[in-house]
Image 1 (cartoon, helix red, strand yellow):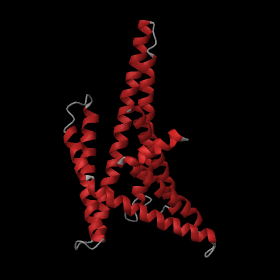
Image 2 (cartoon, rainbow, N blue to C red):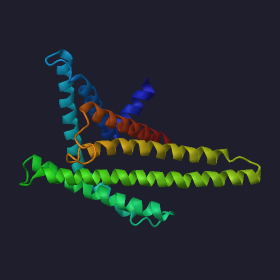
Image 3 (cartoon, rainbow, N blue to C red):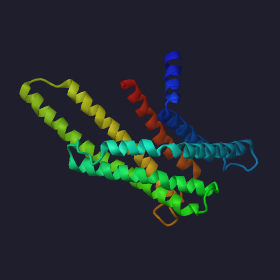
Image 4 (cartoon, one colour):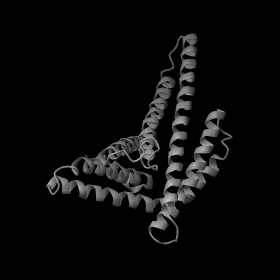
Length: 241
């Protein structure tokens, strides 16, 4: 119990960890609220569902405000990566560069939309929310392509490792386990990004694929799946450190 509590405290003390926890609670509340709210109007379960949906909306707003301070960290990441000179594969390099560009442009668009909704500036927020959603969806799609490309490269490395092991009559167990671990992480990233991408499409203007057709519980389910994967990944990252 004590180690688990300490792990949770460490997670909440970091910005990324706290954001993942808030995100998970936000989408989990939307999932449960979406299931309960359509029930008999005026019933206790229906009222609880509506309260959970309102709670989820407040947590989502909280995350939007916190992202006002993410621009510099994203800029530092983009500058450190640059044009990916250290990347061996050209496909990975350019996908990552485009991904960083989409992420960098996402933040100011969202900030303007938030400021317009808060009446801090005179602007129509709808188009800025649309821009930010398109950039988020683009980033997710590029992330999926990057993970798929990386999975292909890891599969080739695994086959090469098998051939070298056969020639040396020794099985490089450590290399195998490391490669399989990387492949599992990338596969989880693909599932997470696909869940988020389904929600991003839902928030696009009506008429685009399944835009606007998801009920609250399905949006919550997709977000919860993605958030839980994110929690697992950040937990493993912390353990590795």
